[in-house]
Image (cartoon, rainbow, N blue to C red):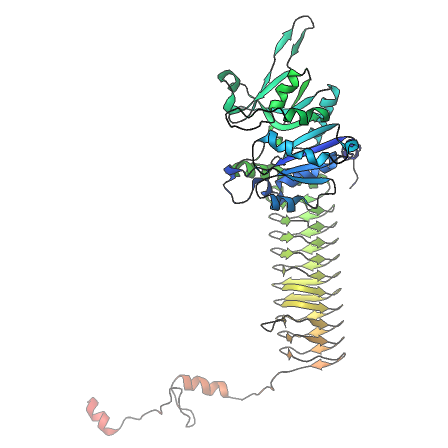
Length: 515
């Protein structure tokens, strides 16, 4: 997929920019044993959306400030890149205190210290790179000391209010809406609570101003914390410009603080993802019922039927069709593949033009080669199915390596587990396995051999051989007629009935009694 000019520009890093991400809070309103920033949105921890965006923006270090479950948060970000530095806020004393802990991440080389910082919250996965770049543009254009991202809400309860000067310059004929301060909800006066413009929690701050300002913060407030928002008033007192950018889409900047907000973010993010792939040339028969995780990649001309779920880092090629009810997790699917209804695939690879389903279950470690077929109610695990091979019906294939052109009959089982260990089955090219075959691993079937239906294979079979282990057939003519008679309690040709008792004929004495 070709990138537009705007997309290419958006991927360039900004010289002299450092980023600080606050990810230390527990998130009590989530009512969860999992720290808030690790809750997933469209299959990805919400923190990673913010961090991945930061990696596209910054050409200096990125500091992630952790606190609650810091070790788990560290694991979630450790693969993001060499410029990501995790710092700990051992005691949660407020947002200003959290940002101050990041100073060490930028102190190693004075020549590499950022000229300005972007400060982000780890719970804002819907915030876009476009918006943050626009915020930086405002900061640079107005030569501001601090620039804040704001939004206007119908109900601003619980949010910090943005207090502006709102003075009209009659000489110049323009309104002065300079930001004077941000007042937290618990510290706001009645008039200030009436303000509907709120602080989103995203800032651009000049590099030489940020940390000296943080050292001057005073925790004497309703929460007894060091508020990051207080640097706004400090900047005003020093005669620095405080600029602001107001969000057009309110949802983009609001942090996730509850399960309801998490569900809202999930809905918005999944719609963004669907729109992205529709624009890229993917067909969705019912987009609203199609679930696609953020890490999924899909080729053009692929068709997704209703109720398809694509999870994790799944990659699907071009011209592939996925029918209803399929769930595919962390798989690589080639071009021109057809996946029929109600298949469950996990950590497997499907090569071009293969056909699966319906009701196929692929467990981790399966490789289905080009033009191979896996059919109704077949389960596979740690298996390679060769090019053009077929396992069409009611089979379990585990820990197996299967060559090209193999036919696996219905009801075939690789008996790979002896109660203590797993063993491998190897099947050569162009082997024919009859129905109801059991392969007791470890066992090898040579190329072009035939395994008769109903055979239990316990020894290796050489190439070009026939293996058969059935008991010889016995046919007893007339046996069925005799059996029916016995079950009915009648004697046939002097044989004893099924009840084991010979029939008793009534004698004269018994007849007299009946009279």
